[in-house]
Amino acid sequence: MTSGKRTAAWIVAAGFAAAAHATGINPGGGLIPAPDGKGGVIYREPTTEIEAAEAATGIRAPDTIIPGPISYHGGPVMLGTTRVYRIWYGWHGGPPQLPNSPPSHTDWVMQGLILGLNGSPWYNINAAYYNGAGQHVSNSLTDGGSIYLPTSATFGGALLNDDSIYNIVTSQIANHQLPLSASTVYMVVTAQNVDETSGFCRTYCAWHNHRAYSGVDIKYAFIGDGDRCPAACQPGRYDGEGFFEPNCPTGDCAADGMANVAAHELSEAVTDPDLNAWYDASFYENADKCAWTFGPRLGGSPADSNVYDLFLGGIPFQVQENWIPTNGGCAIGL
Image (cartoon, rainbow, N blue to C red):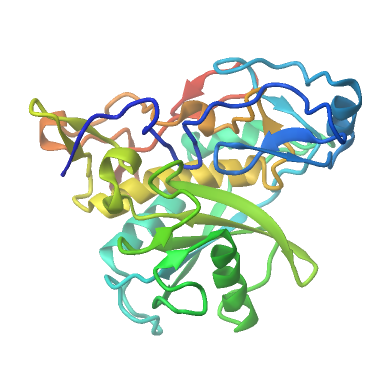
């Protein structure tokens, strides 16, 4: 358990940074502020006609700061069935990747999340988002399976950076362990002793991004083990003595915390895969706007730290709500 209280400077969500956000168009060089996939802001060249108009006029698309609406900025969304792969980096709790080998309990929980979200009211919120042709995200997910990798000096050992995550993913594609696909989200899930040095446990718990590889725009995400910093990256509460108690509805606190941030990043990856589609005036993507906001309790006891707000495929989860674009607001399903 971790002592101390969550403060505005310490609360971080999956890809949600606590730092203040800029709110205007950068007047120099025609650059625009945009999401960085971590809940923060970067300045970059416009990549869509809508963004180019914003850069030229200095006027943002018609939206406002949280809790205001979210708006479309011209970029793509992920269409059709999205496949999710998990690369367990530095993870020692699972078996080697052998044919028909049973997954570890932690991977079982994460797999159950993906399979359970498929066709669910929770994931259906993402189906309200669309591209410039009016094509909507599909309420359809499929599980691609998992790979276990030991820490390697090739990628930085137990001290990773943002490029490490991309390199881990592409190494497995190059080795034909994973397929090369633009309709896939590759999740690098790290062990408790592994740090992501650009800000894990300090300004984010997870993030998503995209980059070209062999001519294909791949989407990938970093999912950190919240056991490294429970008060920052796991759902939970403080007891009467000020100690943080993570909420663990399956009894596996690492898996339960990862499930929450993985759902967050998955929602953002399908609705804003290239960081130029759906975000608000503060550059928050859909899941950012509802980070750490949970749905009504379906079961479990706060005193026993096993509260859940989703029950998917026989597994209890505590997963944050998501933002509905049509009328605004956070919800646990649509």
